[in-house]
Image (cartoon, rainbow, N blue to C red):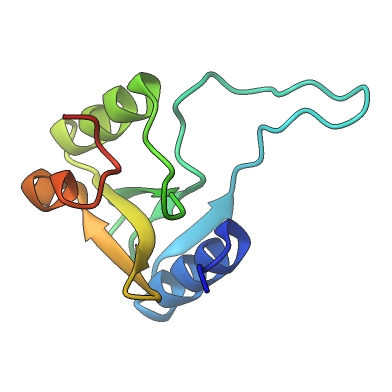
Length: 113
């Protein structure tokens, strides 16, 4: 049984908050007459560490892939000194993978080769 995006998001938020981070869920899905309000590519969770470092988390379920805009945004966060994570499902367990370890992302299928 695969873990849902909602479950992954809740797990990532709770895990990072336990480590002292402050996070907010960014929801850009249009609903009814409400339009999305942010540019494409921004992470699902955004916030900061207890030392003030920017933090972004993109949530991806099994079979999901990062869009080019998401790749650009996560790389930009990393290059600007922030911390970027992908939260996904590995062996039916939620995991956080640091963007700085991109090589390990290749095997997950999240990044296009």
